[in-house]
Amino acid sequence: MEKTNKVMIIDDEKTFIIPLEVGLKRHGVDVVSFTDPEEAIQYLKNNKVDVLLTDYHMEPSINGDEVIRRIREFNKDIIIYLQTGYAEMLPAEEMLEKYDIQGYIDKGEGQEKNYRLIKSALKHAQTLELVKEQEKQIDAQTYRNDFFGKFLYRFIGEIKEKGMVIGGLVNSITIERETISEEEFEKYSNNIKIALKSIMEMIESLEIEEKTMISITDLEQLLNSLFNIDFKIKNAKLDIKNENNIFGFTCDIKTIVYILTDIIEYLLEQEEKEICFSILKEEDLYIEVLNEIKNKEIIEKIKKLVLLTNEIEIMETNGNVKIIIK
Image 1 (tube, one colour):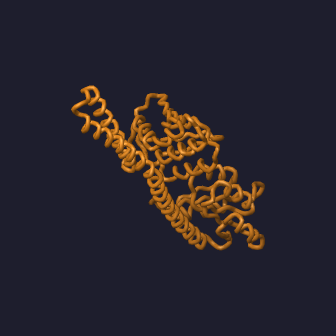
Image 2 (tube, one colour):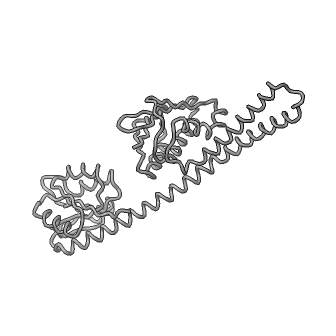
């Protein structure tokens, strides 16, 4: 994993920013600085930064506490230190706890001490990043286990049903071979082949861990195999509209299947009779869910699944969901 080492400085005094920025760069740290807090906040919304140093007293701009409050609304992970040159005007301890601020940097302490503090903060950020990555892997493994456990039962039921059909057909042929016509024999044989083909399709559907490319036809077949019994019970069907006649796509297939499976399961619970996905290609290829998804829990769940890969992104607006494949 790449080491984290990006620092942002926000201070209305350029005379403080310049020497600190130069010194950090000399120590091998990537630094970005702003005198305008509004610009800094916008930058953080679109860029990853590991450690933030923000001045507490900034005039006429918003003060450091307001900057931090707004940043914490969308970024809970960044390590934050307040900079101040007024030891007697430090903010209350309650503010540190409320906004999860890691501490202070005193402008009067000297640059070397501040460098050591910042480098320590960067090491801490790197450790947190490693922990998050491990948690993601644990989440991924847990979900995979749940996924296969959940659907194995369905497959066992379906395979038993197909096995009974095959067994019955074989018995019929064995017992009646001398009395049935060639046409009836051909009919029995074809039914056995169809049942065997269905079993093989179900088995192949369980092998998504190894897939890196899938055709649209295979994706539709895989999802129909997974939900074959449910669709029969609910009198529902899956419709995948291929708007641009796209053959298929290459990405983390298992995560796509996990996401679509959770969506189908939710829509079946909502008694949807026709589950519709549309596959389109604009700047990126994407799968649009044409059914509305009103449940925030399922939205959060599929967004969490996307964190397992950097090849997929979820866009959601008022229940309209797009799965973007980069």
